[in-house]
Structure formats: structure tokens, C-alpha cells
Image (cartoon, rainbow, N blue to C red):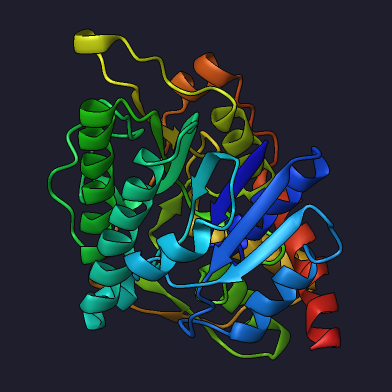
Length: 328
């Protein structure tokens, strides 16, 4: 089978492509290689995929519907789609809102229309986000909870994606599954994430900025666990039960534990053999104090099993980061 992966040069996208290729699948990867963060990092991720003969890369912006469909028309046989392309970042959405409308709304509509017109589409899996829970105080976060009060435009676009997907599942019986990712970390990660910025600062003997004065907790999820979950979900399209239920699913995908931000700092200090100088700051606009994923539905439906603890995953990132910086 041939699988389309959008956001192929992204953190999760590159890892998903590699895992699919290692399973012997044909993969078409697309990405616009935008400059939200270092394009060189994105290109180096793609270099990890180029040795695979079964991998094809196309540089394209998914928000350009006409060009996307014209180019993808040349690639027949796509039966599954993993849609990971998006404008990421809660804080960036406050100062650059139109970037999010173009990529996350127009871009997702391009993907939905493309999928509904494929002859043999089996499943569309797309990235949602834990940010859709907004200021929800009920923990752990469950997909049964209401998520109609987002506190950032980024979160609003991700909830919009879930609603858009439901309409297409209902109207066109398109099998769709949305995955609400929880604080993904690991090798080849994103430079705008706290674990990356903390590691970079600690290695340069710089202070690190700690928001809400350190009173923060996150469901930190290692990249290998995320990829395993994505592939398990991709292989299990939701059932079409007719008028009773559209072929539509939403899952949390996290590590099923909420850990203090300061625990992450402690693990980095131990791994790097340094003591952090902390710059304690108030909560940032659009941020939340704690995230915690309830993942029983994903465990029960597809056998998802996150196994990597923070104290094991962060040292792997640090080892990769040191090598990456040596070669940069």
C-alpha cells in the first residue's frame, strides 16, 4: 500500500515516515519546509528518509488546494493518509493568527477534500492536540469532556479540525481518526519546546525561563511511544455503523502520567551534570497549568502501550542533541 504523510519534515512526521518505511510501506511525504523554526533541521530530518527507495518527497503547501491536487494526482494508489502538517505553537498563534487559519483550516480542508475523492481510501488519521482542553480543570483529560472553550487560536483550529472531520465522516462516510497529542519529546524534536530550549541553555551555562514559577505539570510522551500509537491507529479504521454512528474517532495519545515541569529540569540537570539557574516568571498567555491524558480507550481499542518514562527518554534526547550540535 502507499501512504501519504503530510508534515513529513516535521518532528513526528519524520519518525512516522521512517517507521512506515521500516515496515515495508511505500510513503509519499509532503511538507512546505516553512521557516517557523530552523529549516536546516527539517532538511536534516528528510535526509534520514532519503536512503529509502520507497520514499518520495514533495515540497508543497497544503493550503494551496489547486496545486496540491494537481501534484498528488501523479501519485496513484494512496490508500491511507497521516495528516501531521500544521502551523504549530500555542504562543506563536497569538502574534501570527493568519498563519494558523491558512495551514490548520484551509490546509485541513484541502486534505479532507483530497481524501473524499480518493477511490480506495481506507483511513485518514490526523493530528489534533491536548490544547483543545483549554482551561478544563477536570483531570485526567478525557475525550468525553466538553472542549468548547479554547484559550488559544491554535487550540481553536485543532478543535475545528475535529469538527470538520466529523462532518466529512458523516457526509461521505470517510473513516477519520483524530489524535490529541500530549507534549511529545525526543530526538529530532522541535526547538520551540521547553526540553530543547532548557538543554540548549544549560549546555551554554545560561539561565532557563520557568513559567508560572515552576508550578506546571505535563503528560510528557516520548516520540517512540507516539509513533507506535499512530501506526496502531492507522491500521484500525473506525467502523461505519450507518445512521447509528459515522466512521469517526477521537483519542488522547499520551503517557498516562502528569509530571512536574521541575522534574524535567531535575532530569536534565542530572543528565548534563549541571545545576540550573532559574528565571521564575508568571504564566504565559494561552498556556495551561497541567495536562494529563486519559488513554484507556486507545489502550482498549488498539493496544497502545506507552513504556518510556521521563528519566529514560530525556537522556536519549540529550545524547542525540549533543551529536546533532557537533555536526551542525
